[in-house]
Length: 102
Image 1 (cartoon, rainbow, N blue to C red):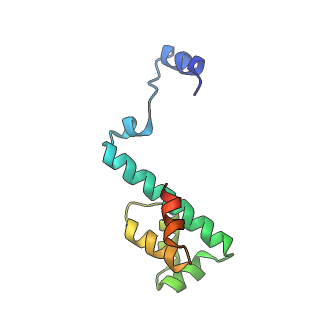
Image 2: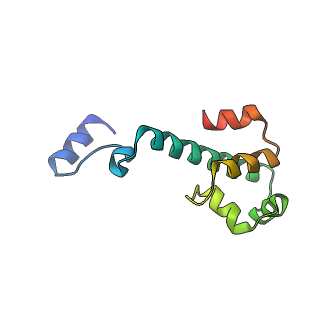
């Protein structure tokens, strides 16, 4: 956000800050959320790159389509472990997983 826009918003009574400030996240929680979002994006991109449906991925993982959809949306009920294991099941290497969260 440019400085002029920030000033204009603040003068109009808006509070400008980060998502972490808005949600009152600790630095550790902020990193956790960022990693989860990165893994969910990587999972969706890999699935689409392989031209697989969520249902096909679910069958490969022994899960349901709705679970894959939740992984791709980084829902709170999905663990980082499940996301990493799913990426690996789709052929991602260690370095590709590391690159996704870097």
